[in-house]
Image 1 (cartoon, rainbow, N blue to C red):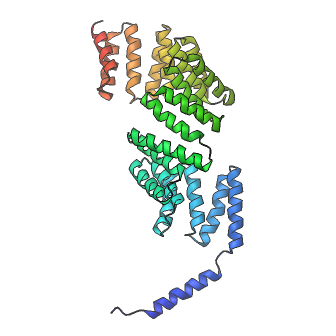
Image 2: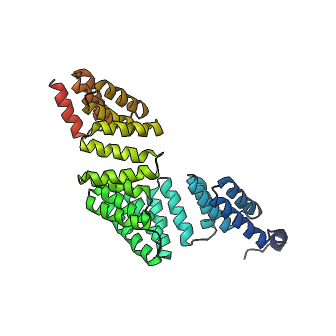
Image 3: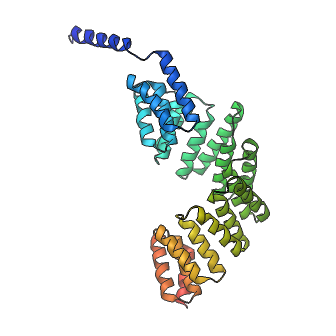
Length: 351
């Protein structure tokens, strides 16, 4: 039988009681948590963290402070720091659904989708009505291409969210985004319209519905959604970008150029905007401007096969055979299965 070291036990007991004598009073901790929440509401993130760090300096394993700090770290796009705090909680035996859900969110942000699914599944086993866990697990399924599972979970998120009476604007929109990927455009419109009932100022729902309306050739409806986004967020490029896409689909290339130019003024580092404006210029037979824009897109994003294909199309219009073939060969190196690039290359060869 192993001999018990009574000296060690007595020392541990002594220091435990000693630390309790100097532990932060509960009223002081509550005041710091309240202050943290006030700072958080006022977007004073650093001050919020300072409140929590005062608590954690006194007790590094305080689960309430660790949870709130992890939450703030996630908002700051620092998932690795959030994981460290949540791991401290989980390793100490705390396995409530809120902690597991937040851990799953952090894993998702790190691109660890299978681990996110594991966390959210365990959270759901602890609280089958937790609509937010279904929503996050659905997003993880979507990220790894399991669309049927994602649809089931988004639908479960909406079902349980209705039971809890929560805002489901983002949940409906998330499912709509997946329907958009699947080409189910009527479903997209239906879900975005439902989302609008919950959160009528949620920009993403209008952008998503505008994409679906464009695919359905309902251009007036698409333009109306884009106009609304621009009206409430005039300094955001998304509305101009989306409306430019609608004008491209309509063949209104001058309007498209104007919108992409407005978007570029807001963000001049977005390669997609230059590439799209370049294509609009190409359709207006302004080939030099087209080449300049697409070349700049390539400079910003040299590994995007689409840009080389777009520039090759402009070179074909300008009868620059070798330049077109060179771009198409590089495009096919980046994306060997691009059938359109293969067709363009045949056209270039026959010039």
